[in-house]
Image (tube, rainbow, N blue to C red; front, side, top):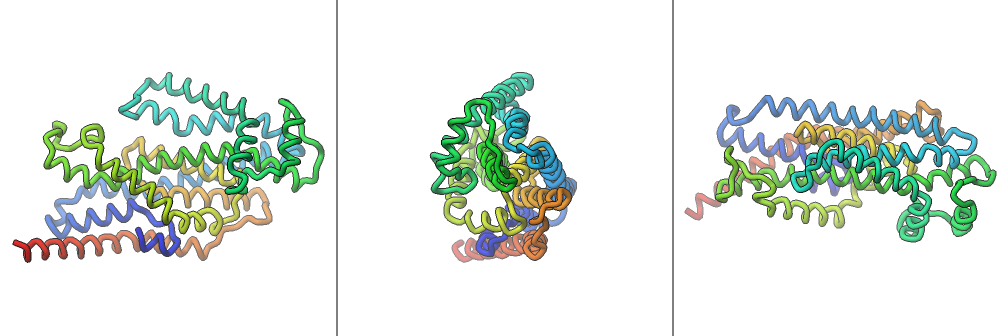
Length: 352
């Protein structure tokens, strides 16, 4: 993983962990120790879920383009469509959280009602969210950077959201600002499902090993997160530290080098990623967040081409580099894991 990060390539933690586990199992107990059927399912998910993210983000951006961006008054069109956009943002992830979390675990109907209520509530206060976002993040993010004149105009327009006539480019730049709160909501959803996938993926082997030395085990001999929370806490801490210290290296590649992004495009890509990751998590399949989000970004790039944007297109040089890294990650991680295993085994023999 560090090799890919320093190379600014979004490689898969799942590829690394699965490749390492398979390699260690092969050199210790042979092929019979590997659950090959499960490995096949994981391999299928590594292909299917990025394609699902690609198709979802493609469809979402085409709909946004036709329903909002292509309109004569895109800001007014956004005001009409925002209710559906906010509802979809909450429905994509929140019902899954409320129904599947052992700490919450509410019924499916209640989860949907809560998600609808929160979506409508955020849509109703979207203008206030936009102004708050401008005040809080103007120095750090261009996604919600309104000028003072634009902010004054928003205040003076009132609840109807009518915008004065402007040039086409000005109108598009302005409506893109309205996607700022939606982009944050979708990014939080991706981060949540990312944690459900990648943190659990990293903590899983540690939890199973720790379960062998702890009395609190389930009937099957495996530990649950409620019984052994400390591996998950370690994983969460390392996850946050890694994002804060080295995450920017990959952020640049995904955010700008594959295809040009705007808030509306990034929102479509994030929603495609949420759908792909949530689907895999519901099926208890470990998939790659990197693969899903790259697939979703590709979907947006293809949608731009279909919609006729001048900046449409994909950076195939960067994509070839990413795809090559994905293919090499499994044997590379397996080789490193095998070498570490033999090294630790040698140390144990020397100290015996």
